[in-house]
Image 1 (cartoon, helix red, strand yellow):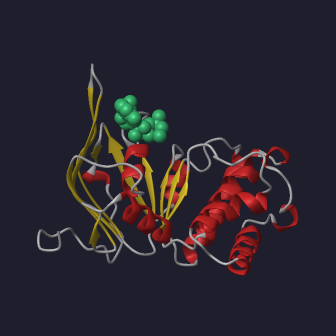
Image 2: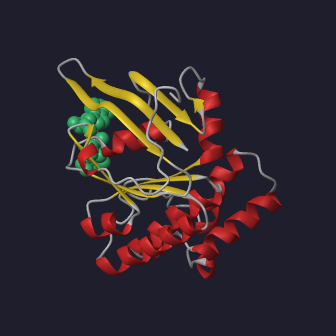
Image 3: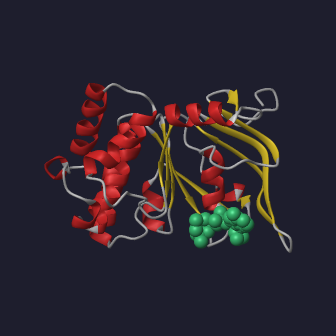
Length: 237
Ligand SMILES: Nc1ncnc2c1ncn2[C@@H]1O[C@H](COP(=O)(O)OP(=O)(O)OP(=O)(O)O)[C@@H](O)[C@H]1O
Ligand SMILES: [Mg+2]
């Protein structure tokens, strides 16, 4: 479960201070499929990066499965991230000289799984995204939608509890976008919590929750809280 309280993030350069996230409160429960929308520059990627522990924050608190990430070392953070979180980036971030199999396997190598366990996970992930027959292809031999599915396979091969997806259908035509959405819905039904950035109102409607961000602030008026959502309490913070 993701829980952030009063979280702020400021980017500082010599000339300008950008308040990318302003006192955000958010709880995402196990099993939710939440869509995050907002204008360009509103802080969507920043929020995802903070939640993915790829980026630090200036104020507030972030609890990942009840554990505060504040004060953790880089090593502890990456262990936590590798164990719990799968990331699908804006753009695919695939290694072009690697086969699909090797692309998906690489993060598993960092985690020290045995060769047999890596093989099991990669094959299962490739099957889930419907690309088992192409395991030895290189990314350049695939369509955009297929490459996006490889990026999803790489994220789910880690068997994360939480999947953070930054515009996973942003570069795709509508048919491929629909296939990727269906795939994410399937992964969610298997128990993985998903937070997905999208520009597409139809996709936001298909999620079970729609969170909007404008100028670094969550718009609580539009925050749909599904049944069972627990309001934030000071005691739980
Ligand atoms: N590394 C950085 N250094 C300085 N400012 C940054 C940095 N990353 C993001 N920003 C600023 O923070 C704000 C939020 O950026 P962010 O990338 O989160 O927006 P976004 O909602 O993902 O936009 P888009 O829809 O265009 O991807 C923007 O004003 C951006 O210029
Ligand atoms: Mg972005």
